[in-house]
Image (cartoon, rainbow, N blue to C red; front, side, top):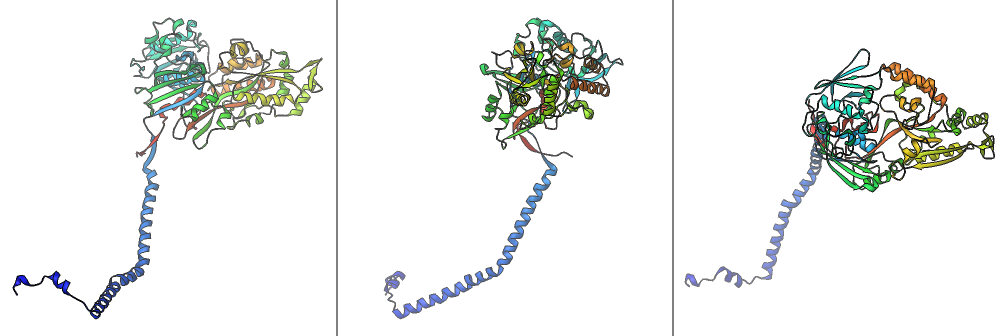
Length: 598
């Protein structure tokens, strides 16, 4: 058979006919081989793995502990060289109640207008974060030996937001403008002070008499640009284009004014960062102020995300806020809420009646009305201004109040007190907001004395109600529950000196006391803080004796903001609500990690 005719391998396999015995032998052999391989490569290794399991687990756990410890140490020691810092960007939006009718700061009269003034304009002197007066545009200051002459040296290189240089001419122009009655400035009281220019960076003030609160008063005067206003008649400045688009020298400049809903006092002012601000570039890119007609509208704007923060929310709205989303602070300010008696009204002209009402007023219960409890207040000045020697009012004593009225001839006739057949009737007036609940509480207290009481509530933001002209100026009330702004300096001459008891003045009680007058005159004519304090303590004692008003509580600035934002520190001392912007250049809407420098 030739080679080509040999059968192939496939043919050989096809020709194999295995026997049953041979097949069984082959299967048993395959079984033995399979078992041998299983014991060698699987069962023995499983046994070895089982023996090594404890060691494996030990090393796995050990490695895990080492990794976790390293991560923990990294995070623990990270705080030693990394901290969080405000991001230099973002838009901060703050809402507040009130109107912005004019953007010109010399016409500012509402909280919203004052806030705008603080953000856009600079002053010679300003309040710092410690609540004391410090330099703003001023580089240094000297005072004459007689206390009648103040000389200020301006900082160099200060620019207006249009790029022009700010100098002494701007300061002279500003004070000349507010002294000119034709300008109708809301800033008054400077008519007897002489301001002269020494050189381009030096100004001198000549006072007619020593004025203790002079530096504090300077903090209320924003400086205006002469180059933009000098050619405008003073009586036309309020309606000029400048007053709707002003240029200042503060940390922010006006970008856009949006009238969202003027009927409901809703207006937005968008401000840009002023990169050449002499006090240092702010972190924020932009700052937006948005006004609302009342606290309810402000609350809705905050909750809906229209604004990130809100200043001056009513207590009832604050109670509704979700605490996990917002940070809420109550910053004491030097404003007091009083029950002010109109001493020219027959019903409260008798000191015994006023004393009885003071004894019947539980101020602790009034302060308990608020979720953010305000501080107690006994005198015309804040306790921080008078120190530890502050006099205090007599404690709440309803029975003593009743006996005081009895001794004054006002006897109970049924449920109402009468004298000579005439009922003891009082009209109580206040303004809309948290003051309403205070008025209601006082009425419920005084009603226990047998007094016939009525309450009227006015809305200062309602154009149909002219609260100032119809109520305040004509003193159309027996009792006025109202806030009085004291400010950083304890001078309260404007509120309690008899010379201010007129329709244009702020002596809402028509209080007249020769002793009080003398003490107020003496206190404001001294510059030594310890001597001024002694005078004010004596004045407060006289005031408590005469009872022209009842101190109810010291107001607080209620400020709400989202937890991601960083506004002013709660450690700051803020004499007035607008002083919250003293450190606005450090405010931010977010933070970032940064390495600490040695």
